[in-house]
Length: 185
Image (cartoon, rainbow, N blue to C red):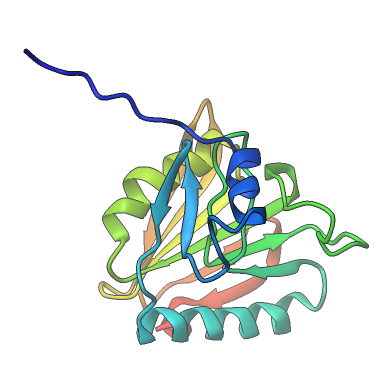
């Protein structure tokens, strides 16, 4: 006899209630992906160094035209609230104190990966496409490449390119901002 196990799918509201009631603490490194609580991988030095570098570089290059959200939640829908490494957000007077950013608030999401490249590519990139995030960069610190995903349509990115160290990239929302890939690695 085969027993079908049922999974309980959590909503973002339930996820927040668990934190408010102390079931989850700020020390719990979990994100909500398609209704499931997923443990986040520990952050290695190459990963953290890349995030620190990009945060400072983007702040310098953008000069306040976007808010830089580092490893904080973005609410994609009722059942997904990932914590991307970096999200460039539309400026708001409240700095998102009253609500987490929604898809329409996001210019760009950057995921930096050393041990999670496959997961990010197979799970998070499609999740961002389904939420109509206009642009996502997947930075593979091991291969020293950047995968750039743009123009989501019906849950799939229409444009994807892989950039190597000798190439440059710009942010779709800010075409005047150019970054040489070799700077990132």
